[in-house]
Image 1 (cartoon, helix red, strand yellow):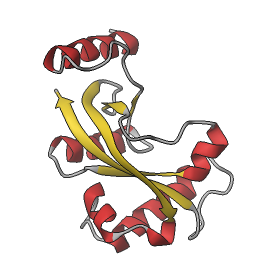
Image 2 (cartoon, rainbow, N blue to C red):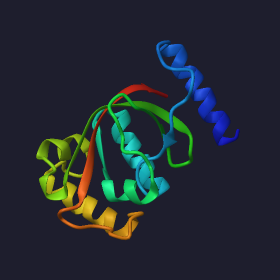
Image 3 (cartoon, rainbow, N blue to C red):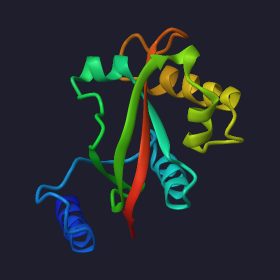
Length: 153
């Protein structure tokens, strides 16, 4: 089944479970930079551990991708491109990398969930995978997004 059909079918199932959802399916995307990373982070979401994510404002500006907003719905894909979860954005803050809080790091659910680990993981990620030619800097603006799991398969 083509990815579009999978997403459409997933969205119909979501709407059956949550009739208040809009007719139009939201954007579908995967966490991370590799299929394995997508699966790892999705597992944290499905386990209720990962309730936040972060992105580089520089990446949003460079690609023209809009900055997340409260109320946005997101279909999360696994490493093979299959829709597995529906998340709602419940809070968004843009802060310098060095000002990301321990609470946000904990909510992202990676590693030992400490701020030090969060900083290490995200600095490496943006140095290796950033869309922006600026890549990483301690003062870079980070979009800190709080998420709520609405539905999963």
